[in-house]
Image 1 (cartoon, protein in one colour):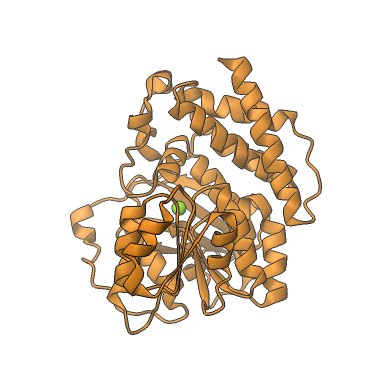
Image 2: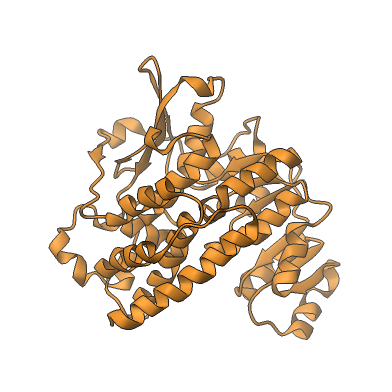
Length: 368
Ligand code: MG
């Protein structure tokens, strides 16, 4: 919304979808004047309608309302930024309606990458990454032949605990896990960054976005979050994308693609940074990363199970039922119970999601 408010002559918000932050939503409706607004959480419809009376905006609610917003006829592009598995169906429906997608919700491709890619191709829809690493790779690939890619180097900040000793992981509190060192993000992504599950999901996301075998996607730790990812080509040359860690940059690029438009933010001050550091990823300390590779190698419904198990485990961690170091243990137990089933239709991904949520809750129930 910040980006759009800077370029009022270029972009118009025709539909908005929110969860439960009604105060912020009201402010945005009054500022951006969308034609339709969808609310998922509990809402006093009469009061809300009264508040937006002068805005000429239709209020819709529930899953049906969310899909109405996602498919809104006047929209050319949908920014898919709901967090977690709930983002899958609205994004899928937007693709089916022929909207280009600016994708921030990585779970869409994790759960149903094959189906989404097929549908996007069939509908002539572009999927433009907002995730900073994928935006970096997308930009590095510009003007280069896909055949010439040797490997993608996905950078990870390592989260708040990369330098914490493994023995101390059992004492990590929920509040501590939310404190990301370099990026300002929502609760789900911050927690996933702490376990490195975020990077596992991004490896799977990259596989589908860039149509590459998983062996060509590697993760390296880069705590400063200045190099957002790199592409190594067959001749050994590597292209990297650097910028200040600010999500407004990849968001703007997804909106302005294929052109670039000026953004008034402070430039990256490399002399002040002095050094950029890189480390090998540590899958012993962060087993979630390995679980991500395992899930996508097994393929089909397995990544959807990985994602659902992770969401349930994070909720249990938030509730204090399990500790930080139990998260990967719970996810692995769930994966081990799953027999991957073919992913033919979007319903197959939803089935795997439901199966995994129940299975993970059962495992947690026995665990505590
Ligand atoms: Mg990212």
